[in-house]
Image (tube, rainbow, N blue to C red; front, top):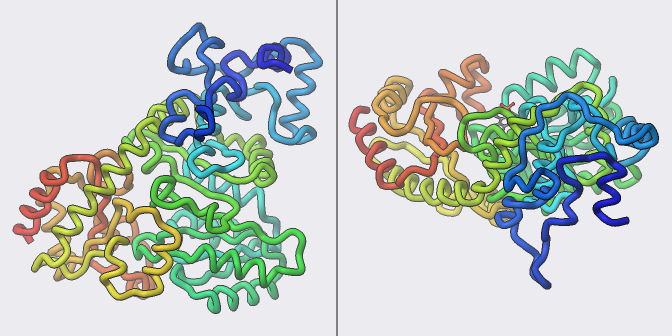
Length: 440
Ligand SMILES: *Cc1c(COP(=O)(O)O)cnc(C)c1O
């Protein structure tokens, strides 16, 4: 069947699956940064428009009744792989489909889904994968809203959980999985790496080996999902270390301009179809305009993340050893900070150190606040991964409601400043931090 006849049959007007766009030149497989400019979109289906139009419509016209039936077979899961053509905007739309095709490319995932926020992606994943009595095994700490979702919300529906610390060894992970098996069906293993704000890396290879060993007798082993928001997709690609599903807050580096909220899930077709069926039901897809903004963002993803990473390396080199600085929690310093196990995970799992790190000032809240209030280029705000540098005090802001003992255990001390470096000029940023440290 040619592209044209398939387009006619499915009634999809904007584009069809990306056969038209090149994935290869001769033998050369194109890099994601090249493919972000055209993959998955055929201008001839949209009046030659170089960029995809934003499709503001709630529903899609079927070319005939038989096509409508085929499309619904896709939506209801009778036909695997999602709808063959577009049906209704709660299920999907042209902008979101292009976005999903392009998201999958970065980690060579089979398929991807776009969501209205990182949390709606995570919530849809959990709802799709768990039932009352099941247990979720997870690394800790997790993003605060994810912890709330597991413990307080899924807990109300009879889902249990057990966690191991992010830096756990194979033996510690084994022990928690063995314990979890005794509690019921382990539905999902959920990771976040590096943990926020401790920056502890999870050994995904060890988790995958533990899962394969502890659940060796099961044909349906619990899938491993991981929140890759902090390092993905440029600095870490955990599907390569044995994760099955990757979750993103696209609000952060992927969106990258602090002007949208969105989420993504990547993985193999079977997992994605399970999650898609839940998304179809509850409508957690992102809107077409946000999808379009993300398409624009993905064109510069590698440029932005590379520059931010280079900037962070320079800024951290300046901060490290400054007389008013106690410690810089930056992945690039793991080797020199004598943490052999974390350094080993870093070498095996990470392509770069990222641009979000923890700065521990000498002193406490007074010193942290004086520093934050003196910053001129860096903005005082939570979130991360934008073009602009942001700084905040977790103990007084994002983690204010965390009990004191747990704060201490996680290293969320009053002198901690969380910094996300942007794409400004590195020397300007260093000048800003140098002046602000004088105010401490
Ligand atoms: C921000 C964030 C989330 C939540 O994403 P939203 O887009 O704000 O819903 C989840 N995980 C991590 C690691 C985050 O940084």
